[in-house]
Image (cartoon, rainbow, N blue to C red):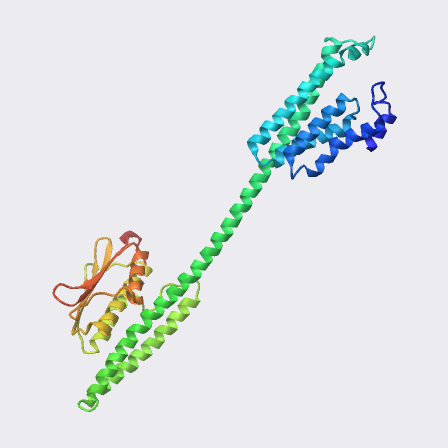
Length: 387
């Protein structure tokens, strides 16, 4: 309204056909007030502002500065906030086309006035009427193009920002899942290590305790030997638990001292001390293998020997380590009951996981001639094997 009064005071609207001041103010309000809802209803506001803009000019009641700004804001907002992009594009182009059509109509309506207002000393390469028309076209092309392109640019920027925020949220969610998975994996690893370390020695102690109880009255010397083995197994179990817990506390620690392929024979020896007949043999040319492969092989032998002691009721145990061209094979068999393998225990699950990590294969089950067999193959590259 202030601009209407200023414009009137400057004599811009002082024509014989100018409406009353109340109508001039009404047209000004009709052109600008809808902008208050431009983001909620950008399409409707753009149409209302465009109609009010043309209506005010038809009534010769339209001041140009604020009205032009309102039209620019309406077109820009429709481009930046229009939800239906196809409809927004068509509607903006339609409004701009209508404005240019009105510009030509208004120009020809004012043709006589423009010609009469020509200054006597005006000079130029073009007739005044065409110069004036070209001037209006250049100004309005820049005006509408800027509003149209600026709206699109802001919408694209907001879209990119939204996409970046969505990707960031997805990354945070994925990171949270990865951290949760890491915690679960670490718990599984600790459970597996505890099982591997404790189960073997406890099994040996249980068998020796049973032998000691049976031999206590008949053969005291044998009972004492069994008790010595129990004591040594308990001490070894405690030492391995300490080493394992120390390794688990250290970051990225994987190999526990003594839990490698070089000590696989000690596992067989512990089984022999229970009174079982044992055989241990290494075939092929031993080569240094990666620490992770060495530890996996040791744990597989340990679990297979433990299962033989606990479940098989076997009298003989055969453990063979074979160094093949690009694979390490662990073969453990016994002459026990050879019943069907159960897949729910931690031992078999741990063996499968260790072999799967290295891309190997695991076979287990009853032997055709009686007993049970576990055979694992873990690939490795000789040229990359290091200790």
